[in-house]
Length: 308
Image (cartoon, helix red, strand yellow):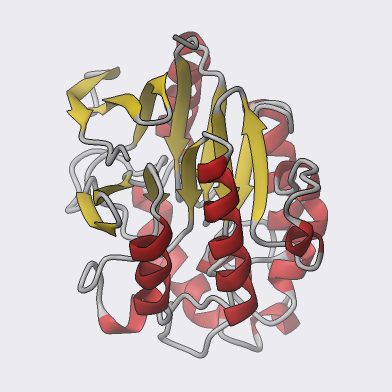
């Protein structure tokens, strides 16, 4: 039996503090995000808990780390540069996979700047069986042992008071091709996206607009595990696959301080073993229970993987 593969999942670090803001940079939707940061997020999303979480991740030495978006807050150019430096501290591009979130695409053009700045962390490995992957930045695939990590993007600039996710038909078609091929090749397929694909998982103005199309692709082609962020919650849901429910797992914000209405900073550690047709996956949740606890184990459970 192949060796166990350990994967850590974090999301929504919303790295702070905000850099100095020039007045002309706020002549857009950014003004709303800037006010929200000053009034709310600067107090609840702190580097103190994020640093503790990252230290614990490194202590557990996972084989790979997935970051499912929202590295920044209002996508200032200096935020994007700082996030690139933070990724270097998190791990090497070989060991860290990143996708963008809605905050990384806060204003038109920002997500393209992020893709350039973080390109080493969100580019795939070569697979001659999937030429469609060479046509667009997403999806990308990384192969690690018998695990394939598929990075998708739902990040698109939206209007004021909106935080919806979107996915092009071209990206969905490429995802369908990838899932088919990777299943035939015997991989444990992990799909990363920022917005939740489960119907009703978040408010209408924060929804994933193409979630129904995405679910149809999964229903037809399957996957072994789907990871997302966006809601800052510790939800464990599922969507239909051809052989049963595919686990859909969200992790709280990696920087949220304890004592607020959302769970405190946390990461998920997945221990994957087995082979095609006989996969096992153990989930361990690590994070803060309160401001004095340090990083502890919040819960553990075996996930039901739909084996064919």
